Length: 396
Ligand SMILES: Nc1nc2c(ncn2[C@@H]2O[C@H](COP(=O)(O)OP(=O)(O)OP(=O)(O)O)[C@@H](O)[C@H]2O)c(=O)[nH]1
Image (cartoon, rainbow, N blue to C red):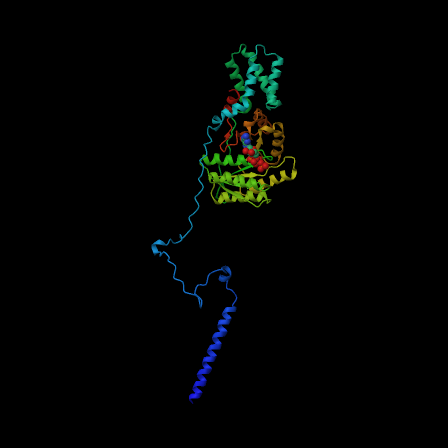
């Protein structure tokens, strides 16, 4: 019996020993866990058999107060500081020096000619040439010269002040001083009775200054207390959308944009929709520059307008014209006017040309007023056009 008990004990011990060996050898062969794979060189945590136990390193003990806990939420990035644009009123006066610098050769030239002792045919021809060189256009030039000639004749003797006053009056008459030049930015109410923002479409050829003018106009509107949404319907050039977005961010206006090469009409539609959702006052839609000679692109512009009109009428279509392009600007104006009803002109880069007479010519050509003039690259260098200030700068 004792022997039997001994045999059983030996058998149990043997089974236990074999089991332990198998488990430990399996552990050794187990594939590395994710943790191990991530940190293969980690030192063993426990001392191994045969190693001398090292004295625990002196480690500075930290109390609960010493341990900084991670913040519950990451701090929000600081909101970009919004710029406060200059009010629109009086900008033309502020920019008068710039206008005078570029334009007063015309005014001074005319005054010098008119002050000649004898005003013969040759002198009147010179006056005509001066006006034509400044891009006033043939029709308005002839009209202006005829009227001046008649008034000078009636006046008889002429003092410099009288001549200046005469010329001022006649130039002003050509500019249409009483014309309504407000950019229409008052919204309306849709058929469903919801408030609708005013919609302004900005069109023109490549490089005329559309995006810049849209950005500057957004600032004018924000300065006057309006909330603005921008539509980057120039989907040909990704940089144009970035450029517009940057303008918008500076004054807190959201920019709606679409995929590069996407449908501009759909971006324009979405921008107006966003304007309605946000209850914005004005939506400015910047369109891609297009050559007036490319029929397909011009048709596309017509589509942009029609699609936007699904939300309601477009309040203003601004044609951006580069004043330095002279007579070519008039050709562009004519073609654009055929595709979309232009309601106003923004004449840019007037600071970079002596040919300010284009203001008269383009108004005459389209029968549409110049509403805004660009007088520099600065963010607030866009002014509501004021004929009196313009003529005074010519004659400065
Ligand atoms: N001096 C001066 N430069 C201007 C004025 N308006 C615009 N510019 C410059 O004209 C250049 C073209 O302006 P953009 O606004 O990019 O022209 P765009 O019509 O949008 O061009 P595309 O997108 O290619 O059709 C920029 O360098 C502007 O800074 C202005 O009134 N005076």
